[in-house]
Amino acid sequence: MGLIIKVENLKAVYLVREGTIKAADGISFDVEENSVTAIVGESASGKSTIIEAMTRTLPLNGRLLEGRVLYRQKDLLALNKEELRKIKWKQIALVPQAAQQSLNPTMRVIDHFKDTVEAHGINWSRQELIQHASEKLKMVRLNPEAVLYAYPLQLSGGMKQRVLIALALLLEPEVLILDEPTSALDVLTQSYIIQLLKELKKSLNITLIFVTHDIAVAAELADKIAVIYAGNIVEYNSVFEIFKNPLHPYTKGLMSSIMAINADMSKIKPIPGDPPSLLTPPSGCRFHPRCEHVMEICKKEKPPLLTLEDGAQVACHLYGQGGR
Ligand code: ATP
Ligand code: SF4
Ligand code: MG
Image: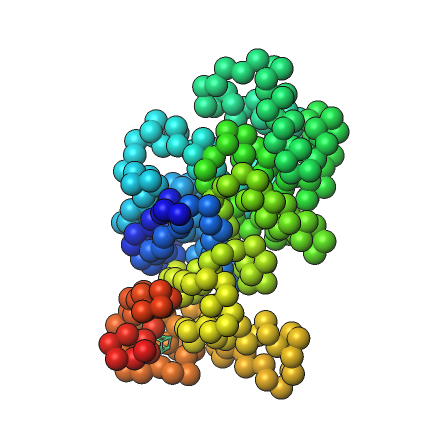
C-alpha cells in the first residue's frame, strides 16, 4: 500500500469581527491507499475545518494560510479551478457535514444525480444515468425504484445520508471523505451506515477519510485515528494502539471516559476544564491549561507531532528528546 494523501502543515483560520479563529493550526498526516482514517475530536475542535481546507470548501470568511495537500503527489491547494474540478468527484469525493440539508427539496433524487453528471461534463443518456445511479443506490442498499423519483422530504435521515453516499460514489472516486456521516442519526441507523461503509470499503477498494466526534464509531470503522484537540492533531496511530496504549494526555482522558462506560464509575477521570477558545488559544501546547503533566516548556513551545520509534505519532513534550 502506498500513500494516497499527504497533508502538510495545513493552517486555516476564520475572520470574525473579534479577530481570527485559529481553527486548523498546522495539520499534517498521511493516508495510505485503501485505508480508513478517522478524524476524531470534540465539537468545535476543528475537524470540519481540516476537511474543508483539504477540499477547498472553506466558507467565505475562511482563509487557508499555508500548507499542502498532496493527492498522488499533486498539491490540491495549488491546482487551478479547472484542474481541481477534474479531481473532485472523479478521484476525491466529499460528503460534507449536514449535507442532507443541502439536498434541494424541489428536486427528485434522479435530478441530483443528473446535476452531478452535468457539472462534470459527462454525456450520459437518460438510460445510462438511470443505470449508473441505480447501481450506486443498490450499493448503499436502497431500492432504486423506490428512491430515484422520490423528493428528499420523502426520505428518512438515514436514507438521505445513503443517497448522498451513492451520489458521492457516482463517478467512482478513489477517495471518499465523509464529515460526520453518522451524527444526527438514531443509533440503529448509525450502525447500519457504519456496516455499509465497511462493506463499500471492502468491495470498492476505496480510501475513506471520515470525521466523527464519537471515538466508538471511529473504532468500529477505522484503521487509523487522528485525535484532534483545539485545531491540532495531538496523536495519530492505529485504532488498536490508540485503544491499547494512548500516549497523549488528552487521548488518555478521552479513553478513560469511554472505557468507564463499561467499568467502575469511580475510575472515571474526567478531563478538568473546558476546551479553549480558538480566538485566543493558549500559548505553547493548547492543552496545557487542562493537563496534569504540564511543564514550563508546555506553556511556551508548541510540541511538534513526533514520530516515535514504533511509528506512533504524538504531539507532546513528554515524548521525544529523551522523553520516550
Ligand atoms: P463539530 O463537531 O461541531 O462539527 P468541528 O470539530 O467540525 O465541530 P469546526 O467546524 O471545524 O469544528 O470549527 C472549528 C472552530 O472554528 C470552532 O471554534 C468554530 O466555532 C469555528 N468556526 C467554524 N466555522 C466558522 C465560520 N464560518 N466562521 C467563524 N468561525 C467558524
Ligand atoms: Fe501536557 Fe505538556 Fe504534553 Fe501538552 S505538551 S499534553 S501540556 S505534557
Ligand atoms: Mg464539524
